[in-house]
Amino acid sequence: MIILDRPYVSDLLADTISKNKIPVIKLNEVFIPNESTINLKKVDDLLIELEKGNSPILFNSENGLNILSKYAPNHYLTTVTDILKNKVTFRKTLSRHYKDFFFTEVSLKELEELDPSALPFPIIVKPVIGYSSIGVHRIDKVEEYQETIKQLKFEMEVTGSEYPIEVINNQSFIIEKLIEGDEYAVDVYFTEDGEPVILNLFKRMFRHEKDMSDRIYYTSKQVINESLNKIQEFLRTISSFFALKSAPIHIEIRIDNDEQIVPIEVNPLRFAGIGTNELGVHAYGVNACEYFFKQEKPDWENIVSQMDDSIYSFCCAEIDASIDCKQVVSINHEAFKQNFGEILEYRPMKVNESSTFAVIFHKSPDLNENIRLLNLDLNQYITLKELEFV
Image (tube, rainbow, N blue to C red; front, side):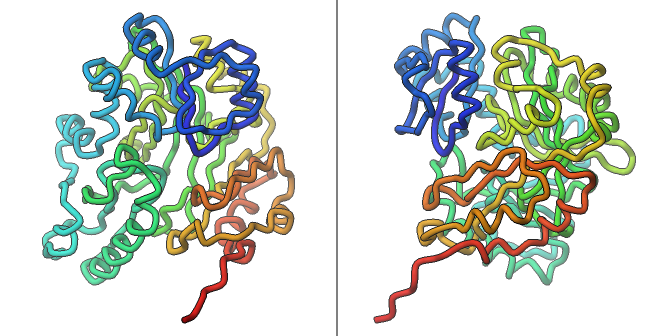
């Protein structure tokens, strides 16, 4: 069973659901392409599926996760979701493995009032329960602290109200030690025996060391070769810590210069959001949703041997956090498209509903296009409502 919620259901996901006859629960009147061809169920049917325990459960969006606590508060998947989604609980569970890793939970008021000189800079500050890069800030030294917290508070006021508290809690935050290294995003499910099955492996790019945006992720033959096996072993460790079984997750990790893998966060019961997991279909022919529901395992050795040397990327074109997305009148998509050499698929998003105005899957011979896109000012493609002066 798949639970579909806002902000976005792609044509590919809808076609996959229809072709494989996957039962669907629809929440919050989310638009589903070709809805008449899918098998819609009632929310009450979720409890039946959970009690049976023999049907894979997947969410397309974190927005719908709160129905677990409402309909099945004592179920194993609800418990796992609560642990993984809460960054403090997640860190506490891992603390026996990462004994020297600093983290602490504070309220928004405490963030404003604490003495930053006692903190082990550089640090990351982010919501205890969060989504995407919203509210995530890197602070390198004491002198940057107060201004960054002021910016964070404003960001929470602008964007935090767009999501339910189960997705973003704009009153509770974690301060943690900065994790250095290359960052990867992994879509994986765990079998009934707790064995991890990797479905997607993407690498994240940053404009500079303080950049926390989700603008560019990419994959390639080299990305998979350099990290697949070591991440697979790490996921077995994660599985044992949290007793993961029969569950899909999206996990973000960093690998430092000593080859140590440190998890940044885990997003339970879903894959990469707003359809970005479907980059795998373009890059190496793996449809994560289909593989999960069929409980199939990619033959990575064979897949990599057939890949070309291109860079396959997705670009999340986002409205700046300082701008209220409800103030956007239009996006000049045609002009924005001119920044890409080879577009594999261009997905415009509804303005006024989220901070992302388009997701673009694209292909390039090297990383130069991605570097240019990271430094591109997206405001030039956004038209805002005119301010009214009294």
